Amino acid sequence: MSKTKNLYIKTFGCQMNVYDSERMATSLGAEGYSEVSSPEEADMILLNTCHIREKAAEKIYSDLGRYKSLKAKNPDLKIGVAGCVAQAEGEEIIRRQPLVDIVVGPQAYHRLPAMIKSVENGKKSIDTDFPEEDKFEYLPSAPKMKRAPSAFLTVQEGCDKFCAFCVVPFTRGAEMSRPVSQIFNEAEGLVERGVRDITLLGQNVNAYHGPMGSADATLPQLIKELSKINDLKRIRFTTSHPNDMTQELIDAHGEVEKLMPYLHLPVQSGSDDVLTAMNRKHTAKSYMEIIEKLRFARPDIALSGDFIVGFPGETDKDFEQTLELVREIKYAQAYSFKYSTRPGTSAADSKKQVPEEIKSERLAKLQNLLSQHQKEFMGSMVGRILPVLLERPGRMDGQLVGRTEYLHGVHATIDQAQIGDIVNLRILGADTNSLRAEFVSF
Ligand code: SAH
Ligand code: SF4
Ligand code: F3S
Image (cartoon, rainbow, N blue to C red):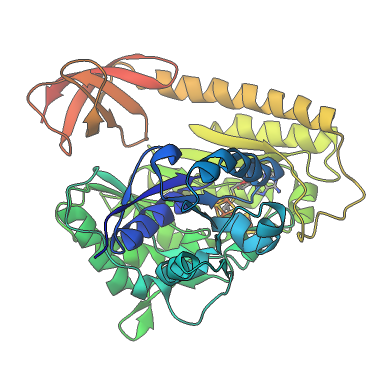
């Protein structure tokens, strides 16, 4: 092998990009690249990008602009753009920013090593195919080194739902599910490296239908398979669509002890008119019914959601219905966004765009309410004894940082335990973003 080269990866967007970046780093590791933490040291810079809102996509070009001086200093520096902007914009990226050498879409990551070779020979390389072959079969698995106790694992990719605002069906392609055995092996490999908490990822993860033997498994079946791995202690999944929340999956929340009592289930809006215009194919009521069933199956379940304000045609009354739904459900955590027009989506041409000031006003109101609930939920942890997975050392001597079943960060000074342990901690107080606790028992 030739001498090691330095790779700098910067990840934008969702958890799937975090997972993909890790797989790309492993794959390039096999080609002699080792990861560094600053672009100044790099021989190769890879931006793993997100196209979901305009701001996210535009940010890439300002970042790329900043690398100009680095390339002037080091003419051998290679710059690659991966992820959803790469898929959506393809060669347009190189037209706008000629210092880019590689543009690679999410379904072509296994071809990255070959693309780099072509760039080393002086040719720019673009691949935004949706290839026949399964990239997961070709991406190398990570070396057996200890790693952090929480990990993401993609089990499903792509989306066939075509919500009127969303680019994902275009950037990630059609829905596909990985085979159960492939996922099981990867999960076992992660657990051998110290992982205790796995979040199963998919754009539409509860539509999972990967092959198991001669039939297709459902997500709850996959979860039950994975729960057989002894040292895997916690299982989560994200992101789900309300229409794929089957009774079997709801029941699994009551049956599988390792499945965490926390679910991210985006609703986007509380108005049926807006939901119809969004092509969500569910109503506010049908969503509420799912939540009711979930709370019946698992009374301590906490919910998280996504919201869009200012979707074309959204009236004050529609927005009020969103606030009502939020008041009713009381999310433990939520993400909310102003509607952003995305090229190629069906809402983009709507003549009923909502003015920017109104979007900002609504967003502020909604976020105010959501953060009030979030604080209340976090506050309700104080005084309780909770199982916490210890994830990393804290800033203070002897301090460890972990996570509750509800994903709250917890700081505690503990000397008996180590990273990867699940310990019972008494929650002493809640700060803005995390909890403070003391050790109770193993
Ligand atoms: N697959 C997931 C969501 C993917 S995108 C799902 O179906 O829930 C994550 C979130 O970004 C969405 O839930 C939505 O709230 C938000 N989003 C997507 N497109 C958007 C747009 N054009 N403008 C504003 N927010 C958007
Ligand atoms: Fe986008 Fe809708 Fe698919 Fe989620 S379900 S990825 S919001 S199109
Ligand atoms: Fe963004 Fe692509 Fe994820 S658009 S949210 S990185 S699937």
